[in-house]
View 1: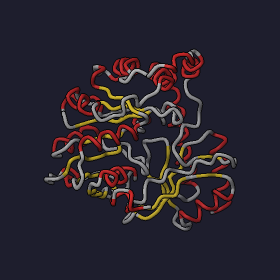
View 2: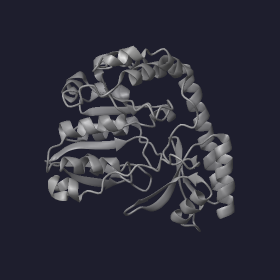
View 3: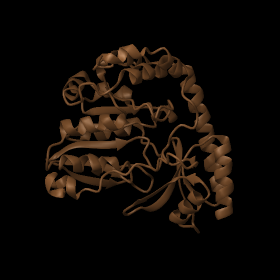
View 4: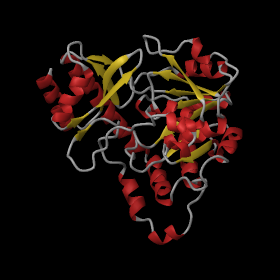
Length: 349
């Protein structure tokens, strides 16, 4: 059947998400979901939603969410574009900026979807290695004639490391193309590049409600950029890429600042506890600014640890990167889930 699809699609492997078991019962610490329920105001917004409204198309601009997000972020609402999760936002940007045979850039190791998006476009990609300290040198900002887009996850996955906003701005100004700062985990850092967007037209900041807002199943994300950029990107998105229920729920979520602050504090506290307890088991830990930790063990292979945990009903993410080797990315869980995880790891190692 490959003869019916574009050659670049036939050649590519495709993005493989983390395991999402639908039947077997696991402690699930593999896809960086929030272990706690979302704001009660989200449930209330969904309960109040009238099914009769579903006969109509949703607001194509998600204006209610943009207004609420603009107030929280301190930008005008026309600086915001909404999407069906931040992956949709990344897809929109790639479609808008990158043509067949052109080039995209991203750091490595990082989010493996970036490569997939380039391959779908029939574009070329280049992966710039992080330094040993998880920083990026000026080579990430170097100018290449056919470079049309750069992605920068900040905090990064799988490492959880963070590049200071002023350094991100330096790289954005060096690049000859737009830079998408993928801030899926930024609420866990207490910092952001959003305030710098006004200083650099080429900088775009992508956010999601999947992590800090505990709404991975809702599929809602958004982009912050200067209005001239947002207007062009809006031409590329699906006409109604966010449904009515997700817009209502996402708006309720982003308005509940008190819940977000409490949830972030709770997750960060559990993250630090998880890292400390893993260290006591002999694991090497990269200090994280996200809702997960990246770790290796000097005497046990990551693959063996992953398989041993899965046999015991615990899912973590095994990841391997060329030139960097393999490791485990472990999402923050509830205190009870982390207790079970650490007991099982102690048994294995």
